Length: 70
Image 1 (cartoon, one colour):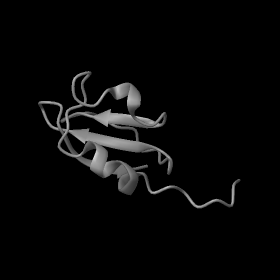
Image 2 (cartoon, one colour):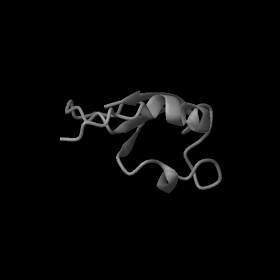
Image 3 (spheres, one colour):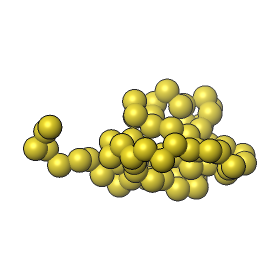
């Protein structure tokens, strides 16, 4: 295990993502951190926690509404 504190992914990515659409013409999904997942309305998620994973929550149009970490 590393002694390095975990990065605050929400703080790091909020200004880059909130209000933008996850599309090739908006914010490309491929530019998200390696450990990330896009959470669409009504999606089922596993309950496993990974402190280095960014969860990108989008509305029905694909616009980022908020971020969670884990």
